[in-house]
Every structure is written in structure tokens, then in C-alpha cells.
Image 1 (cartoon, rainbow, N blue to C red):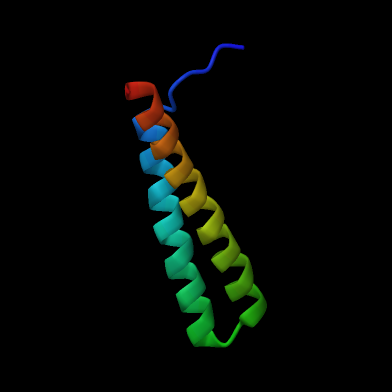
Image 2: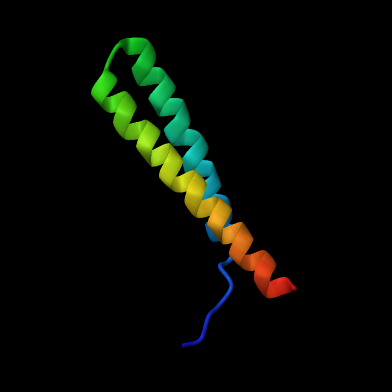
Length: 63
């Protein structure tokens, strides 16, 4: 199976989404909505992991 690099703009989008989800989680925490805080915190972790894995995967292709 052919493996391709992940486009840098997609990685940038995932990174920006991670930051936004973290900001939403903090905002919901301040308002006392714990369930929304947990959901947005999990989305933050998901997008951060996807961004990190994408960077790692692209680094492997470069070397």
C-alpha cells in the first residue's frame, strides 16, 4: 500500500483546532460546565495527538 505524507496545511489545521478546543475547554471550565469541559479537553488531546503523529510521520518520510 502506498503511504503518502500528510499535507502541512492539514497539520496546521489540526494544530489550530487543538488550540481552539483547549480554549473552549477552559471557557467551559470557568462557566462550571464540567461535561462540556471534559468533551473539549478530550478533543484537544485528540487533535494534539493527530498533529504530533502527522509531524512524526512526515519527518520519517524526509529521512
